[in-house]
Amino acid sequence: MTDIDVTEYSDVWVFVEQHEGHAERVAWELLAEGRRLADAKDEKLVALVFGEDCRAVAEEAVARGADRVLWADDPVFEPYRADPYGEQFRALVADRKPDIVLIGGTHTGRDFAGRVAVPVHAGLTADCTELDVDDEGLLLARRPTFGGDAMATIKCVNHRPQMATVRAGVFDPAPTDPEREGEIEPVEVVVDESMTKSRVLERVVGDVTDITDADIVVAGGAGTDGDFGPIQELADALGGEVAATRAAVDEGWVEPSRQVGQTGKTVRPTLYIAAGISGAIQHLEGMNGSEVVVAINTDPNAPIFDHADYGIVGDLFEVLPELTAMVRGDQEVIV
Image (cartoon, rainbow, N blue to C red; front, side):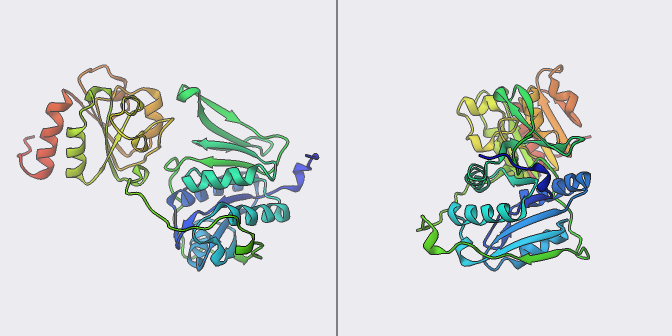
């Protein structure tokens, strides 16, 4: 690849992932962070919206902070396929030269980012949990490394755009301001069905809930000894979701999609109940944005208590059933 002039690249772009007119929450989280980065660099925040009949998503992107929306509207973009999305993005990059591009670390986002970064020779950092810019305006992409035992800060000095996929649930979503003004620019669609190499025969959506959207999370760790029955019962009573530490997932007690931590998912629920969890830093990184944390552990010196709003020193197999009974109204609460 020939050398590029990095001074020709500007603005912060956010890919707004949407399916059938419904944007993924992580897109709004990235708009909030993208707004902060763009302001720090004194540049524009640009949202990318690809899809069919998705004008409402473009309008919401403006309301949530975008200065400009590059809107590609065509049936070729629905449902998502890497070929048309990637080709459309590459054409826009060649024409507009963005400095920073942020993409949600979803299944779609990871597929899309990789397909785009290689052909345009971009620097791509995956699965980021923190973002910032240095004094020179370079993106500082921070992500777990060495199995979550350390954090790495990665900079891309010589290539553009600087790209990052970002874990869902790390940031708060950008608020909506219906009065906010911005530009929605329809862009030329450079792909059609004859140019794509794939066809969607059927789209099947699994029934696994994304715990990053849960308002209440009940998590278990090594202290459960593999018995997540009390965890599930309390989660059901509260209308919440079950989560787990890496140790519990590694043992096969819980599916990986429910792992919280540096090598799992980041959650920001209103209530997080940690039962039988010691409080290793790798796990805390995934839940420290919770509004209220309740910890239950037999060890009064467990590190988790230092990060909890309420702590119960006790056996989870005794405490959780009592909490479940109280929630269900089967047992009187005595204060």
